[in-house]
Image (cartoon, rainbow, N blue to C red; front, side, top):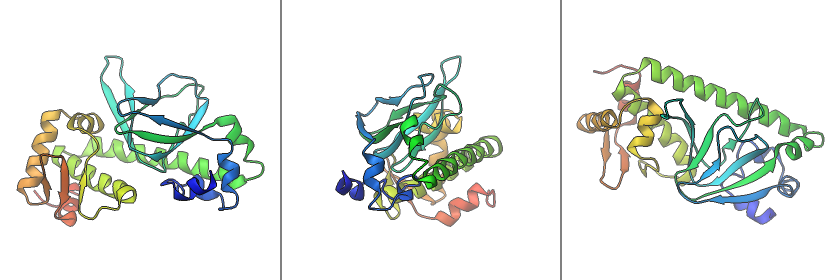
Length: 231
């Protein structure tokens, strides 16, 4: 397990990096590796919140369903992200795999038992929860204050930063999510997503292939769009 942990994409995540190399086996001795196929669910909204997860491979959506059945994607989850922290007894979100996914799973009570011998773990868990809240606030600001083109520019810069840590790309990368996923994340229609991509492409800021490969041709120009510094 130790060797596998050293090679894992999540080894330098907020949770795992709290443990030194000679301590990591202790953390993973109580972990269970789980795998989910593309389209499957790692956890479901309203299930009992007994487990927490650290994603080690693949990309997921973190989503909720409204009473009318519509979906709101709250976040896109990448390797190293810690999933399942909950303030109540039941999960408030579902986590669906956009690609084949591998994650380490702990029972929350087992992880909490480690706090006594590794107090930095508790600190890291609280830090992760704070980051999730900050990201949610950022998303609410974007949804409430930006137009469609600004939202897509923001989204592309955000995903570029997240995915670069995952695949090490330079300027071009494959988007693992569909137009529908992006629409459900930004709170717009699929048609609006397509028009916004076309607008950014016409401005010469991005390129977009039929294979859903995005090339960011002008990051500073995209930032100008996000900050409403250009028309």
